[in-house]
Length: 455
Image (cartoon, rainbow, N blue to C red; front, side, top):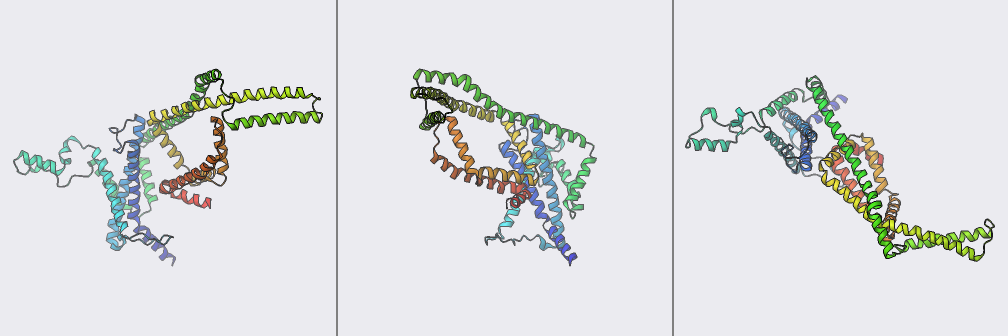
């Protein structure tokens, strides 16, 4: 019985090989499309459509070539496994849907063939788009002309006569240049020989082939240098994003905004308190000082003092509190303008350094997605519990009150409670959408680990 179970599992795995290979090729094509949309305004990944330096362009070219090689390998696996399954058992290629969702809904059988052929069309479009970028040798350019254009030109030249046999264009234009065809034929030959083997063995053979390649050392050194330059640029730009706004805030507060605010408040004899909350805090502090002084006199800790001396001491303390809150009010006004300048400096860096922003984004993606599944789940749980968890409202309350005190505004309890009731919910929804939309596609094992740890 165990032997029949093994054969049944092997047959199921083999029957799903075409769909699995197509899915992997489709995901690689989607990654190429994401790079095109994010960094080349929807154009192909090429130096003709992007204004990047040599290091950044080399990185994008390497990513493009990596995904194109993956697409060609998986499509070769798809074609070879599809032909094998059609020969052995034609019914295996019938697309069936047998999964039932927990809510009682099921996927329509008609939708899956449409998705299947839509993926095929999308992958072929990506391969054709980058096949056109690689120009053939000059002696073969006449062969790569479309039939309609070459035929019309030959007809116009010969008054309707057919072209000579040596210059007659092919009936169907090639989808890829000769280099791509040779690469695909070599990949097809490998897949035809080893399509029934697990993919891990194919990866091992491919790794051995790369190790035996005479140019492997040069490629490794080139990739290392590119990664080093990219990491250095990303760290430098990250430090700039932190240091430049802080320096801008301190410089503008102490040397630009500060003297102007002090001069205007001195000329206009501005009030001590910016809001009623600061006044209540000052009165409460003065009241506590007077009560403590009288208590120390009564218990004998301080020498007996006449009432007039107690009032004089309290008056001096009130003057000190007034000066302290006057400086606090001035600092709050300075913070408003200084923070605005710091935010403007931060936005300016993001707008003027688009290339560094792209490099930093790729660097952060490599760090995040390069972590192990347990580390990803740990970081997700840490951030979600900190910002949208059960105890997060207390943290948001302290943060908003501190921000209000920093800017000199009175802490509005209604606004704080409304913010706590809405913003963490929106943030939690964004976290869940990111996990469902991106992480579940890139690292499904990390999502499974996260669910197990969260439960």
